[in-house]
Image (cartoon, one colour):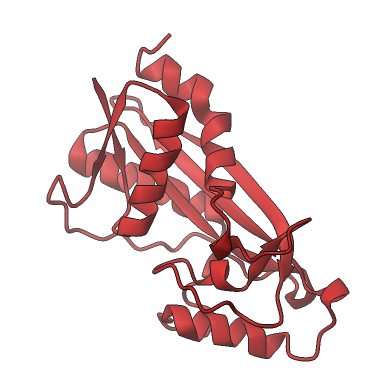
Length: 200
């Protein structure tokens, strides 16, 4: 069975990718940085989600020698002109906790009516298949808006799921059993994955 490295130290994100690939029913075994005992970190200094996804894909593929999938994702709030975007985790210039991110978003939108609270969750995945150095990128977007209040449920590493409501939904993303923007990006990448991992 072909192996694909999911380049993340976030156990929640790794579980999400396992669920995505399970539903796609592909004969691929996902492996993690933890399983490969890779502890090195890479500086995500790109100006866009795409740039960061490429940086991570190249770095961890070179370390591991494995076909590698990386991603960079975050929320873009229209009223805040796209903030926090690529700086979602370091919105205030330092590494924020999930609660700090939730509180910062709600504070910046305090008093803003629902019609102006539109936002989107954006994920860009990067895929590289050694020995090729080319990185393929694919994007997935989920549109919605930022609620006025968070739900009590927290998903570690995914603060926006407690305040983001997808368009047409009356529930927060954290209350829904959907895997959204990352799944969309992976689905777009399937022809490349099947080609390089010899699944077709």
